[in-house]
Length: 177
Image 1 (cartoon, rainbow, N blue to C red):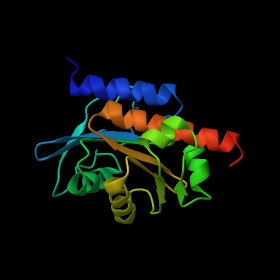
Image 2: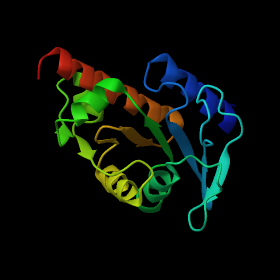
Image 3: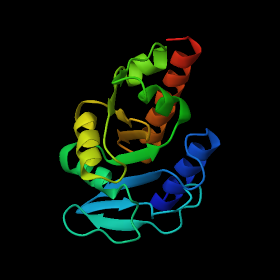
């Protein structure tokens, strides 16, 4: 059986391998009984080291990811059990000119038929609320000019959605749409 740390590391390696994050950008979290476990600020996702536990309410440790507010809001208002935040280049590019992405490819249509594009400064409560609201009815959202947030039952499922979103955006760009 895979441990939570192995799952963080495996998904992190896949995110980097597919070019969905670069350097030490992006973060991941998993819901737990009274809160969630998240990657540390500045950690490399393929070797995240120790993670940080945050309660749903209260102060966040200084070493928690700077996007902890988004993860916290997602867990407050959605049923998602895991969240992956990445910076897929094609998704970010399309977010600059659209308010939502409608995939044309079969996988995108099946798994994420509408991908909302939301606003808010990275790390802000505004962005956290906008992303969490979008993830109430969708499996992924893109923050304009910043990156994707995907929710799922597991980190692997959230990774798969992230990968599908990037694939769908790449197809849209290659098709000239």
